[in-house]
Image 1: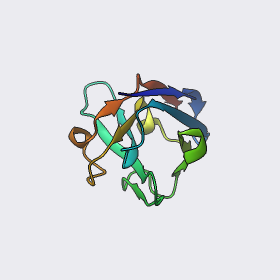
Image 2: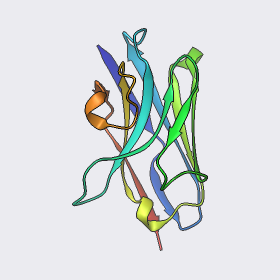
Image 3: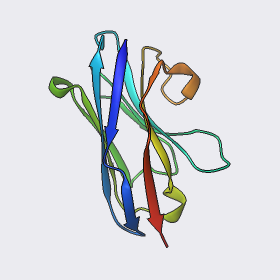
Image 4: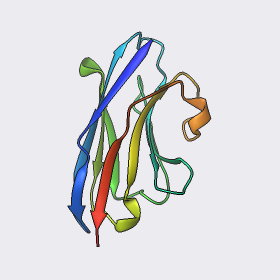
Length: 123
């Protein structure tokens, strides 16, 4: 019902920046929030950031607060994740997610997922 397409991943050096984009299509009218999660090899999927679709309220994991910024463009059905001051521990596959739940930081509360985009931060 909702399709998510991510872009913007890549390879950067420590301290560098990347901007991820996630474009939603389909029946997006009921979407409450868009979130970003990441998963490193051998680790569980981890919450990164989320934004509510209508009000723009944001929420960040402590590990990225002050470095990452989530934003959305409702007219374009697009959510962005601006990542600055990147660290090697940020290396992971980053996933965009959409859901109708008021819970923003749990992967199980999201209904739709993008394909993932690789972010690699070299030391």
